[in-house]
Image (cartoon, rainbow, N blue to C red; front, side):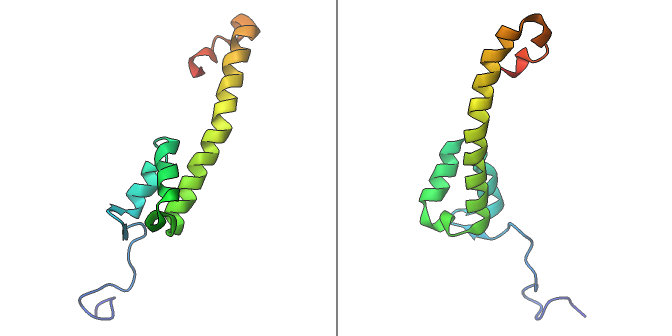
Length: 93
C-alpha cells in the first residue's frame, strides 16, 4: 500500500521545495540573508512577496541588518576607547 492517494503524486510535499518564480523557496529564503539587497528585491517582487516563507526571511534579514549595523558601529567606537582590556573584542570590528 502506498502513502499517496495515487501513485503519481505524494500527499505531502517536502517543505521549501515549491518553486516561486525561477527559484525554489528555500533558495530564495537563503539568498535573502546574503545582504539586504536581495531581501528588498524579494519584498518588491510580487511573486516572491506573496510567499509567506520568503517574505518572513526577507523581513528578518532586513531587521537583522537594522540591529547589527548600530551594534557594529558602537562596538568599533567603544573598543579603542576601552584600551587593552578589549583586545579580544577588536576582531569583531
